[in-house]
Length: 601
Image 1: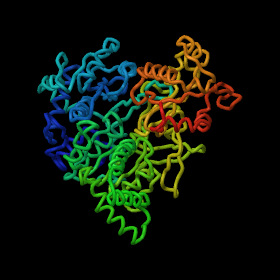
Image 2: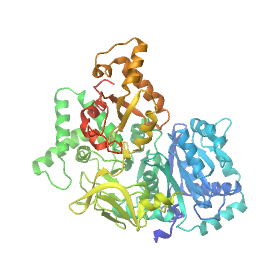
Image 3: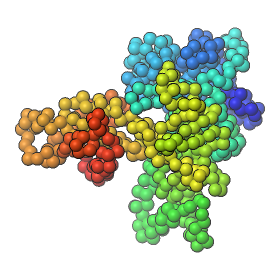
Image 4: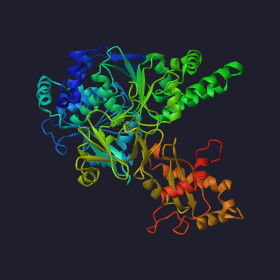
């Protein structure tokens, strides 16, 4: 297969030829799993495309500016894939958006992309979009996947398909070049203004087949996977097409709360995840283990201690291997059963996974492979492999075959190859800063381990990721919070943590005044910031300003500090910018209190 010439939607004819499926896409409907076969999906998608043409979507202008844009904001479900492929086949460009995106950011994206139509999953999202519809001049209609009173169901688009437009779609499909944009994915930048990453069919097809060759995701028509990471994220979208081009059945989890039940029902061979979800699974397992008594408790703790020492590249010796075999049979078999009993791979990315966690799960016989890649690279750069010697804990693995990686003098990771994005939509200035002489400057800092495995050590820019794999831009949050008269200085923290926190220097004068009005007294500033009424005041302030941000960006806990940061004390530059690393090191004890579940706050 000369894959660079293929488009994403060619998977339908490819799958029909290689391994036609009865259960290509699957989801719960009325409490029962419903499967859509390859031929059925192809019919739905073709009619959906024809209906879009009937709505006036253009199918003959293959430029980023000239092609119509269609947005989708939805949970994972077959309709997401129907929409994605249907839009592609018309030559239009899909703009996927997180369901948790706040209204202000949603409004910006829809206006920036000049979105013509948007497809939403449920009533809550319909109301969110409908509330800003009047502020988006380009938006002509909203369609829903759920049947909602007062809203137009997406099936109405499919029903308008006629023979003329079905024939037009076949002609348009044959003319769409693989260089045409398949999607524009908006990511938050350090300024807080979303940037539209332009990815072509060729970008994504390259990533799909390089990943298949490197991991590998073998053609496995008998296998199935569970999908629950948001499809609007390029990682899950890319891996979806890897599954489809490999003939693997996809089952969509009902919700994050029901993943455990769905794993037991589906018994998948694998899934993709982020470290935070693995942490939650592990925390749940350890909590149950702590409830055990006597010999069972001792056996559980002994088994976990064994797995902590697991090394996939070095044998622990005959005695260790025998003990691990016993632990896997008596204890870890229950872990595998909880994941469906058939797990052959779990791929994790989006943030650094705990090396300890990787050792424990792999030692338990649950293979987890960590990878890495930014949206701008479609996204995969590296991944640990199944084959012996091709995986190393604490690294993101070897580079994919087909792309090049080098480190700049400052350690920044640079990537070159057909997977690198076309640029940022309407932002040639940012594109020129990010792609230089064909090399993508990722903003991540890394080192080589054994001259082969890439290890991510830092973020070059202030933008950081939580342990759930979501980007957070601290400056816009800080700027908004400082609008309060009670906040003098603030530093948002949370890289590789479960949630966003903050170090806050109160505006002492304003706070003293508030205390006086309330008839409250204090002796020192240290006493002031520990006062329960003061802490409640700041909780209210944080909650108020949190409404301006997406859930992942909202500050969950904070620590009040007694003294101003200054040039003299070393926390600020001569330009009065915060020295983030200096502050985080100087106040590391305060930061640990933020993330200590046993501390007040």
